[in-house]
Image (cartoon, rainbow, N blue to C red; front, side, top):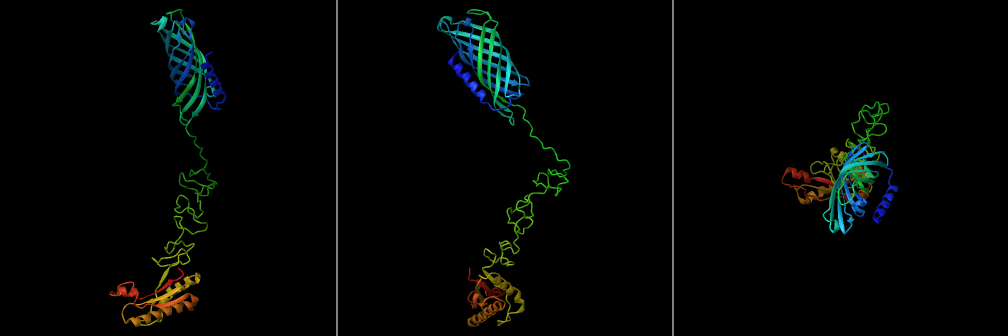
Length: 403
């Protein structure tokens, strides 16, 4: 036997012994099949045996594969001639065990064979004949993708060709034998629909949890739920994941309707770590929510350093800040507008700053943590030409020195 044929057969056996356990190519699909063929020619053709090629296109049904094929073999002939044999066939394959890993088939076909001799002693001779094909083969699946309706199989076959011709050069009813090995690629098979989970009996909201176990009936359709039928709340803050705009809040933290930690005074520091709640809007604060400079609403009579009672709530706020944070220390600054002499305003601001310092000391703040400095009219914040500006310049401020 030709060495190429031996090698091809050995490769086919190796492939067949290492195939995965998968079904054969699917029915109800189209396919193409390129093959390498080897033809043993009838001796009366006066030609050698030779390798060639074949290509088929077909349609696979439940038990049958129907195809059209074309092939060519070009053996050497006697007298230094050559022979080109072209075959055109319509074939039917009866396929057995379609659902198995390997599916054998019987082959029957009819076609037209054309041969032309060239060169040498037989130059110009030719033959044309209707021909019957019969034989057997097998399909062995190599790969399959059911989601796309495709498959690739190894195809091996051997069949005889019986000619009806009585044509030159010699003989009649000539008989050739062909062996083929190639691939058969399928596409367009029906794609299996994805399995639909059976509905749970008594599941009114369709969340997959039986009504008698569902502790959260009425969950929105398609919402992930736990085994009790309740929407998931990964961080356990009481706001379900679907609505939670701040996932990953620490356990126990108080959150708003969006799942975000509360910041009651709006200073940018959440309540959980805010050591100075109720800071005024706009006050700059540190990482624990305490202001860097605390402006105090302190009221005095004209040209007096005596604190009026309506100042106590704001001063108590400063006391609370310093008692909760023993690292806080600072300077009580007194400021005035520009009405009056510089000397008078400087002295008045110093006395007022000292009064505020004394108030904080009397309410528990260590004296070592506070200083009092009056600046008079030297550090205005606004224009003294207007009543509003002068009111802004008359101020007492606790400026932290620990920051």
